[in-house]
Length: 223
Image (cartoon, rainbow, N blue to C red):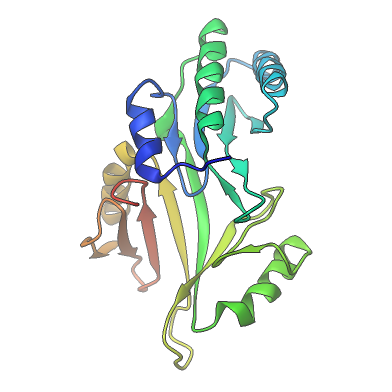
């Protein structure tokens, strides 16, 4: 099953998949629903379509919304990645949403990852994998990935060996590209500071009043 590059996924979003946004690993959307009954009916229709296609999406019925995330497990590389089959299912789900009179709010999607500076992710990765997922083997490349998505991913940012810095952990907040600038502006207005925007829109580094850093990330300008 061939996985798609980020530019290929973004091109598909522009070409007919406007309901969807690519976050760190998945193609994701949100549909507001009137109530839990309407949401459950939509979820049931999505589940039926996914089963018919032999797919296994992540679907969450929350307060007033249904979130859907699409990705495929890669037995060769490990982890989950977006494939052409996921794009096909996204088109089908968008059609189901129209049948249920639902309108996507893709700008509302978000994903939090935790970044940890380390000079040796192979030394610390099994610990965090065992602690967070119950299995020391749930690491793919430089990231701890919970197969059931109960906890945020932890990815290891490679650094030189050094004494413990003031902040070794940081949050990566993945957003839909069209809302990132507004969210950054809101954070700055609330007392934050832009530390580094040289890699925007891929990521922008902010800090709170105490200097604690966070990266606002989008799928734009990535390979």
